[in-house]
Image (cartoon, rainbow, N blue to C red; front, side, top):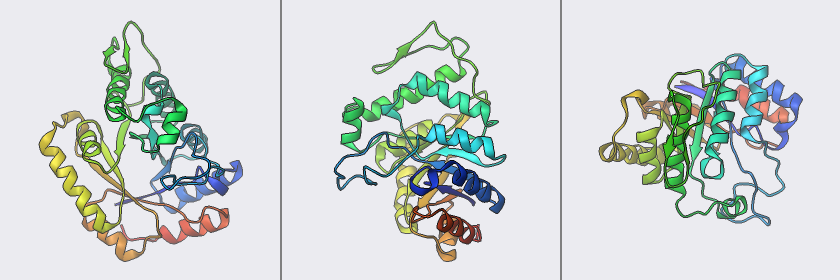
Length: 279
């Protein structure tokens, strides 16, 4: 089981010098991956569903990860997650390919369908149909990354007679990770993702794994995707026994989330403590 860290494109960790220090520390401590979340805007005043205060600073994940790529050598760089329906898929495909090339193929594109209605409304995307839109966008981006003469026609995106280079480092496009805990998200992970990203305790994870097994009986998994990687984040600090339970459940990547993210020194101490977790 590999270890990763999420959340450090927000709050006190966003200063350039702190990003450099913490990213290099994580790499030195043996963390395999560094993940960044996304919220373009947040409800103000804060609503019950919102994960953060509207005044909490959050850097764009792709911009942040490009900066981290430049100051590290081995860390894999993941989005956890990009809210895909809120993005133009062709523009995002170009950004993703650019970051993948600049990082030497280290990008893990984590995506989700979104859940925060005020944010989606402000961006101009209806909540209705966001799942179908997410599926189409993934398929359209894959076409642009991999087809000799890229073309796609769907309900939400259509193009032909265009091309975009550079292509991602991998001939089949960057590795895609699908986040979410709904039956639709499980089916999307099985049919379109190299991995699944969830937020769960070990007890909750058992139910999600069963959901993924059911999804595998309902939808076809392309051979090009290989085995579905299981990536799980726990927000409270993780102790050794909990880490062992995740490993026993078959987790491939355990992602930790430093709290609080108010003091970079406390974040560094968190990284040092959690680097010793059994894997």
